[in-house]
Amino acid sequence: MDLEMKNIFKSFGANLVLDDVSFSLSGGQIKALLGENGAGKSTLMNILGGVLGADGGKILIDGSEVSFSSPKESLDMKIAFIHQELNLINDLPIYENLFIGREIRKKSGFLDHEKMISETRRVFDEMALSLDPEVMVRDLDASYKQIVEISRAMLMDARIVIMDEPTTSLTENEIERVFALMRHLKSMGVGIIFISHKLNEVMEICDSYAVLRDGHMIREGKINETDTRTLASLMVGHEVVEGLRAESHDNGKIIMEAEHLTDSKHFKDISFNIREGEIVGFTGLLGDGRSELFQSIFGASLPYSGSLRIDGNEERIHSTQQAVRLGIGYVPRNRKENGIVKDLDILSNGSLVTLSMRKKGLFLDEAAIESDFANAKEKLSIKMGEDSDPITSLSGGNQQKVVLAKWLSAKPRILILDNPTQGVDVGAKEEIYQIITSLAESGVAIAVLSSESKEIIRVCSRCYVMYHGRILKELRGDELNEKTIMQYATGVVE
Image (cartoon, rainbow, N blue to C red; front, side, top):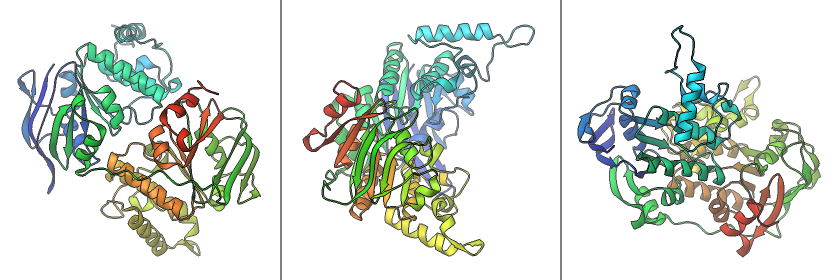
């Protein structure tokens, strides 16, 4: 099935979001839709998905003009939109998730569970998947949840699938699992629109690309005729210059030192140190235990045994409040689930950590709170409207900066960053790297937790590679490269 979107216009008030945009996709093709946050990608796809109506232009399916006034009408035309925030219910089995809103019933009116399970198995067989339809969704890892969403689209016989940042929360092994399924769908003639900020993944999985910038279609082309540097430049409008790797701080004062840290489930015999002004990476694959390790250190997970010293003093951290008092900040992974409060405005999200520190008697010192956030906003170059605007009005990169802002106001001595550039575009990613480097230069000791080896290499002076809850190797200098990281992360070398 071939798609053409011709001369699409869309405005929100006086803001022209899409200006004469044309986009095409052929069956059996994987096409990347690229652009910074705010470029118009989501708006264009929401028009194709029936969520929004266009102000001008037309959509053609196999040469015939169509129009959609609802997502259902788009789906009826065999177009499926898999959003970044998965629409799955954890407390239901896979097959019930696949049939939500279109359940099969017996003549008696009761649900025909056997028929739905059978249909789910049929789809899984067609997609060469080994999944039990009766497994609860909560028991699946992130990649299989993404695969269940794709399976739901195929159950509806989708011929065009829009995938919005499908690998944001996945490890490298999980990403390859999703990519294998995408290649299988491609072989079946399904056209896939792949929205991603991860340009290396785009080069690996896509056949062609289209770049949006400020509501204009900048360029379309074949993947084998471009490279990541060119794509990044097209997205931001200028060449993206990467900074140098962080400098070594071998002689700096040790701010955090751990010896033989162990919990009852996720990590064992962990020893490391982080010095003042140093950026240290912790990396690995699914199940490596790095997030659980630092959640425990921050007092937000299972307690640890072993020794932890902060500024040379032995500490036993039992709560996040205690960790904050000791000067530790933690920016968690999965920003939308753990980093922001969607129902609060920008200022409230950027002030959550320091509220208890900004009081006048029984009341909050609102002037001090606003001043703290104004300073952080300027320092981090947050692009936003009013302080009272909802946090969800910001792009992913600017949301992440607000999450950073709430910790900067607390003036931490140690900052733990778990997947700090998750779901942000290439321009914002480099800005966040510069912020991390600047914080280190001011003396903050920083731990960067990331499964992206390129990120670790770009921003850290050294890193610890974890495998199944243990640190296998500390890498620095010439050893700090993708090949060596992957060898230890996969347990090939011990």
